[in-house]
Length: 283
Image 1 (cartoon, helix red, strand yellow):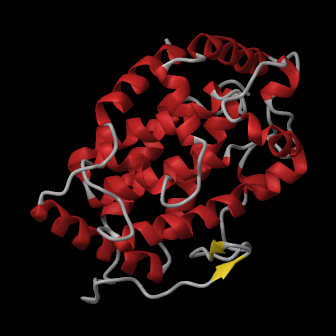
Image 2 (cartoon, rainbow, N blue to C red):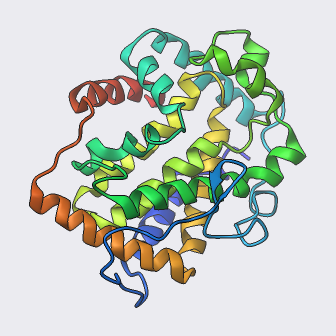
């Protein structure tokens, strides 16, 4: 079990899928300045895929580690290490990364991209992120429902970075991490339209996922499983013509943003410091 999500395998998977994103079909940008309106369902924009066509977490992932196993001991070790980051810049970033509402979450990768990600400046990319959020949640639903894994804070009784969400999170399964699906999917998409920022973008995606360990709401194995589901999701999205067309439009609008010299509005220095501090988790 401990070797299932080996780091070499993940790096290889990322490399292949990033290449797939770059080589997006023949659907091109139609010249429109804004994406077409996308309907909502239960307050969320509909995804590119139906619940039946997203990658199935129950079919693709093994069960989560069990109590007493070597893999669960590793989960517990990551959790214990995270306590030292409480009330630091990494904790502050983790609380910010926990917020998946728009427009907030759209800007999470703006420093890594070195460009704003807003509805005004990058409307196609902004709408893509909104739709992929829905696909990401569908992709984790089956495994979450089957395993109903208890979150770390329920066992270690330590605080979380978003105490107002404690009751809701306590009822939701921990495995796999939807935040990590979202972070990995956004990372791979952005490396496809801005390959010169690949390292910074992938590092931000990893940090976005690790924030969930620091928040004390996910185990390490939850995050790894989520990253795999994010990669699988992007592979599936690349077979969707609507996604490929929007990806080309997003690439075009990003080029326009760069010509205009627009920069992120977030505090990128503070974010970089928090991510550097966060790396102590895996040392």
